[in-house]
Image 1 (cartoon, rainbow, N blue to C red):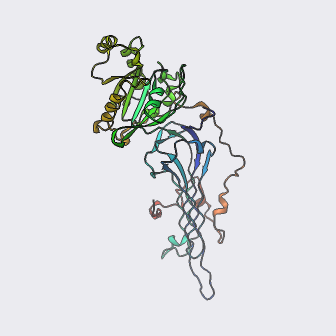
Image 2: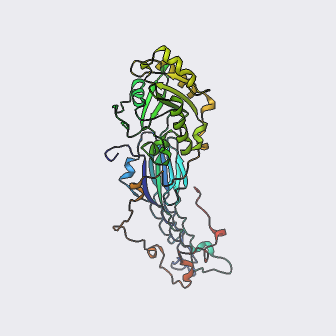
Image 3: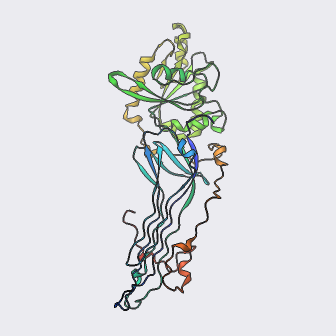
Length: 405
């Protein structure tokens, strides 16, 4: 995986922009005595925004850009001039990206469609200038609101592939061979376990120029839901599939028992996977004659559609496509994306090398908040500038949020 361009799990550190401080300026002009307060508002801090990009298929760009910082809002100035808003940072991610809090593992957001935008971190609002606080009894307010502070958060981005059909099976069940036979995908195929080390997508052609997408993940072994093998890390890629295609080789000792093991592992990983439509494909069926097939039929799970196939000879491939196409286009099998329950990240579902990544930035100096304040007037009420508390001198009823928020 170290040499692969397919990155589906990455940990990054984000910080939105802090809001600019309001100005405490007073109007000064010749022949204009007691011009009054005219301090402008501070600018809004920049947001951190995730945007779905249909042209991306991996989180590789973020692996080399771990720190994402938005611009700070500028302070207000004289003449009721508002400060400039901080620059937003838009992070392009593949469709199907899910965001978790790196500390707690809590699910935060997801990006599913191309062009869909999710505001991950909100920029701090700019403070109001002193002209907002003038009144008949307070004509010279010598205070203004400070801007809201920035929000820092370390998040984990997890890619869950979007496909119509997901292949589920033990190692060497023939999943990669089937995908290469019915699509243009060229996964690695060999006669040893765990040949597939990363998910593979293939577009399966059907009649009348129609097609559907099939996803192949590394083989699952018993105990995968507890961290054994490679399947656990990639099971998330079949959470969004409309149909699950279970593959068990014809030379298995007990086809129904192997299917039961695979089903239990999926249930332990995410019980919601049990709601998906399931189809059983008995691969390598070219080794069976008619008598053996008739003997196997009664042992297969009841009420489960099954097809005997052979990717090498093409046996049953057309029948399998018909069954898959009908299942994929069945409205009852389409689980709405918002209804997917994303399990929180725990010790079994994390990638160790990502969690141990260090985010220290010695080259970035600490923020100096003093540069944001307007020094045009003396200021005695220092408690209003306490960044740790916005209760004193910060009236929420007078705070007008940005129009775009």
